Length: 605
Image (tube, rainbow, N blue to C red; front, side, top):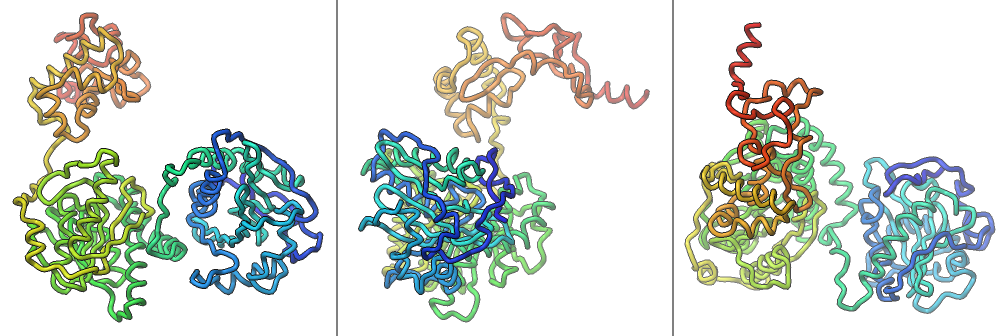
């Protein structure tokens, strides 16, 4: 019995049972025993795309087919095989071929094009010469579920899907098609499926997204919706390995995480990077006929979890960072982590190391290709850049037509080429906006030590301090902070809520330069004063009375009431919007009480 998406779900995250006559899998070679051939397709819903065209529709269809996870969050990857298989294409696995042939009643994948089962998607009309066929395999995100297969039929103005299995959890269990007709995209399906939750989900979520993509991608100059991820590894193998490592390491470290960072992000991000590297290295061992696991050094290893996973999975290596982390003490002795200050140069080498890893390695990022090239012709590198740095300072932008991140990624790529590599780009699947990586594992040319020295000869590297600098605006001069807060507050009183740009213009000069050196800059300063300001949607206003009012429903906060003075009462012409008894802050010295005295009083009582 299939499991279908419920009406309330934005993505297929909740499912319900619905009986259907497709629980068996008879061949579809002309018999009239299935839903697909008992019903002619009818229009379920339509969506206008007046600015769309066949170019945009075709590009949108490719997104829908190959990036199914963008729409269906229960899917982690879509594997697509063209029909008939091209001579240089991927071989269709035997189990997929058997399912395809049994379901469609054909003897081989090459015979699918003439199969009568396609009539339901063709509407009984002969197929156009531009029709393309493919098998799509959807791999589920949840461990323990089986992947599912469907046949994809695409031409210039339509894309149709025909399920090849019953009992679906990931795809609608009936044939359906999206087609571009006279300025509309129409969803068509069998009449018996119109009132099902799956059809409603397609109409309410798949159809509008397809329409939006068709408009967005309608011009020649339009950029693709997004890069395909995991281009250097097999996506299905990656998913399986990631789920295995997630179960093996993820839950354990999320539970015991001692760092002041979000474990749900940092743990699973390192698990995903480890899965990617392990699969990349496995492929290289097979391709290069290597017998031993690759060795590695993680430059700027941070919490060390990536090093721990790679070592635990059999790869000799170690991590280096300028300071230790609390979690280091929790790793076994087999996880080797070292505290060291790295001062890179064209002579810095790591003999015996197969791979240098730079995972958000900041100021060391541009040095990794240099150090890998200097180490030897068999040393590769993996870079996942984050903060943009060149060799000796923050990276300075040159091309404003690109975002800073895109420009920096191009800089790293070209730098790797200058170090003699034939670098490769890829996009990881990690919980981060900085997910593009550069991999240098092939050499295009030999680069001499003199050439590397010349490349890096423009300055002197200054390593960061071992103790991280405090940059939350708390170390700024008190007079500077007080004057900035007063000026902004008085302007808000006079003009009402201000956009952040207007606040920056108001402060200007030296104050703004100091704030730009802090993490979060101006917003950090304002949010450090929640009793004065409220920052929402890029606008700054005065904190309202509800926030300042004593909360009688939270007795645990009673000890802090009246232990500091009310800024608004002391500094604004109109004073505090609340009378003294209702405000959590003290209105004048007589209203102020000592937190220490209150604590002693409660203890004596």
